[in-house]
Structure formats: structure tokens, C-alpha cells
Amino acid sequence: MQPSSLPPRVCSPFRKHAHLMYFLLLAALTLVLLSFFLFVSYRQTEQTVTISSANEAHVLASQLDAALRRIRAATELVAHNLPLEALSERFPSPAITRANNQLQALGNSFPEIRGHRYYDAAGRLALTSDPAMTEDSIADQPFFQQMQKQPRQGLFFSETLSTTPLTLVAYQ
Image 1 (cartoon, one colour):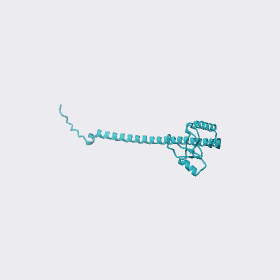
Image 2: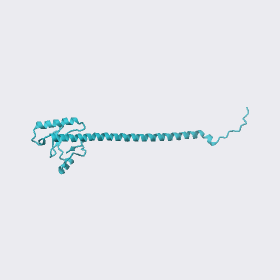
Image 3: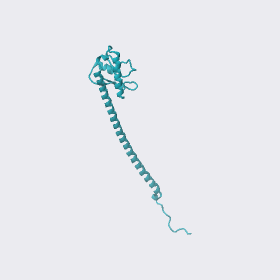
Image 4: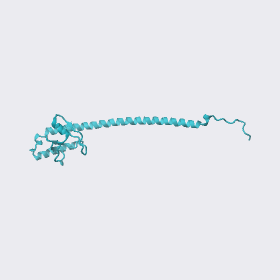
């Protein structure tokens, strides 16, 4: 066979690297699409987290509001039903036991309220829903001292006390 009389093919630089150019173009498009999908996923996740957080905050706010209403109702009930003699030392022991049992039953009705404790004007424990607690004093607590200096009407709350578990005191 004789060599062909056709002239040799001249490859242009574009043809030489055509496959490489197509590959780079495809890689760039893939990178753009991947970036777009990542951005869209990020925004959707951010929106979902924002909505979930807002919903959780509303649930917690509702639960806290309900607990505060229960505290107010329980405090008013105790203030209305307990005689003033209950806070004096002349109050008979069976009556104190009955009042403590009523407080314990009231505490069992509201699991978010850890306990009911009522203190006299000197800050000593007078009544409690916890039968194991016999002696306690809040006379050294800043919220009690503030209330002693400037008595006010209404329901107030202390700073969180560093107990285990953490405690918030409602006082009136």
C-alpha cells in the first residue's frame, strides 16, 4: 500500500485540548450547581432552626406563664385559708401538720413547682410541703432583706438561687 496522498492533519490547539476544555466546563458547572444547592440547603436549615426555636420559645413561655399563674393561685389560696396564728409559735402541732399536708397535696398537683415553703416575718420556716424539712431560714437572702427594708404588695421573684437543682423563689 502506498502512503496516502492526503496531507497530514493539522491539529489546532483548540482541538488538542477540547476534551480538557469540556471537562473543565463540566467541572465548573457542577461546582456552581453544588454551591447553589449548598446555599439553598443552608438557608432552608437556617429558616427551619429559626422557626423551631421560635416555637420552642413560645412553648417555654406558655409553660412558664402557666407555672407563674399556679404559683399566684397557690399563694392566694394559702393566704386565704391559713389563719394568721399558723405563723406563731402558739399554733398547735396537729394544725401545722394538717397545713403541711395540704401544702404537700397542693405541691403534688403541680409538678413544675418543687415545693411550698412559707416563712414568718423573721425569715424562719413556718410551713412546708416537704416533710423532711424542719429548719430553714431565708433571713440572710438578699431578696428577703430587700423585702424587709421596703415592703411592697404583690408577687415577686428572687434571683436564681445556687442550689441543686436551681431554685427560683416566689414571694409575696
